[in-house]
Image 1 (tube, rainbow, N blue to C red):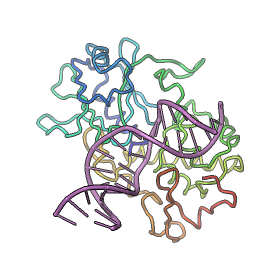
Image 2: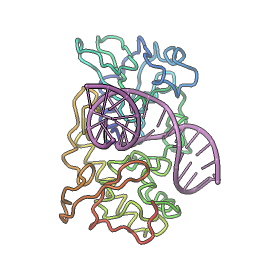
Image 3: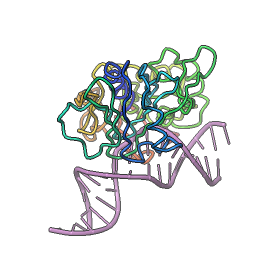
Image 4: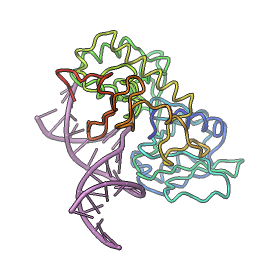
Length: 290
DNA sequence: CGTGGCCCCTGATTGC
DNA sequence: TGCAATCAGGGGCCAC
């Protein structure tokens, strides 16, 4: 499931291939792939054709291609989205949603998405304030991710401690800090020895610092490893799977021993999904906030 | 406003 | 065997 490391892996692969190329044709094959583009599929195609891709950038789980007219093509992979450059002759995926054809190459960028939670849209850029990085206007509400230079740890810590919510809910809230999904939230909480239901307003500055350090470590290591993959749904830009899965300590390890203390990892239903934790290393708080 | 819950979607898996 | 229920989950949206 693409979180920050997987999206960064895609961005890097994409950047080396599409930066400096001109878009010749765009084929939207499934309406849902552009449902966030209010003006519709034809407008989406028209805005891209003829444009030069300047760069590929990312914030959290979003990535975008900046164009030579100042607009940007914003993409979110959702649950199962892939941006791939299939080798010529490779059979087209059953879940192919969009094809972007470039000049001077016979390969095309394919957007493949089985569960159709992902999508692309075209729009303008906007800087949040003085000296802030410009991001697509429609994601102005997405907070900087922990690997960005502008990530303000002190501010995030203060906002987190002012909340009345659970710690994992806060880590997953993309308007507080972005890029973290269910997998890396569980991994970071395990590293920091903190429980997912810990009320944010009871956290000390030191504990918040610890969990944010863990978040940065987990994300950085996963980026270095090329992202996580559990099944064939996620592949990088060349169609190769990442291999970070082997380094997971809690996610998907229900019943298996904690690598730190040996206790069996538990799985709880949480926020209509799963939360994995070590019952010994991560004590449930007396006053939990699920 | 902050917070939490619902819903969009497909395919693999599980249960009767 | 066959069909239905369940699960996976990011984030927009809406009610409170």
